[in-house]
Image 1: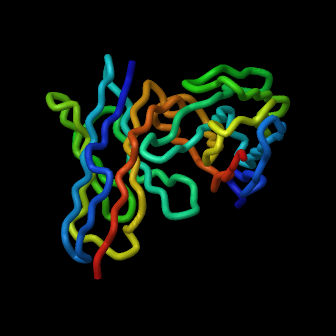
Image 2: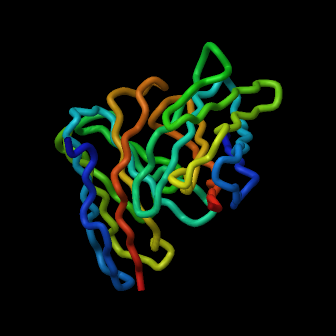
Length: 114
Length: 112
């Protein structure tokens, strides 16, 4: 029972490089989200998706792109990495949008931008 | 705008002692409230949630939380802490379960 799988677990980039953080879930969840976690700030929502083909911005979307071509996958793209994007990134999924549908989190991707 | 404040950044507690983690929120309507726990190097695991009904909710691992509307609080408690409870705890609020605003977290250290 894999749940939410994030790859890679660790990554170091140079400023200006691009990369894609992968997120896949095997629970047939409609809703998927990306958060970044920074010390003392909890998790902040970057982008989310309510289903295949539908995405929307969260609290801190600048510098990130997402797409949702399938129910299972929700990749996060950094177009031109900046040191301010050094963070731990978490992907989450849930069956529905209601409060009785809590999110399931992946183990995170630790990203450092030099 | 919704917000969550966890006033305590760190708490140290002796094994077997009781634990209470504070959470205050700001939200315009009846919120969905959650407590998550994060062990080192891991993702977040849901401990418990509240959105209606009995204001005292029970969760996993022996945790409970009480919703107090008049104080805009949702404090987490455990009567007797085990060494395995050492982790970081996050309170979250939202209109729905998947668009959450998180507090800054409280790191719990357990002394033997």
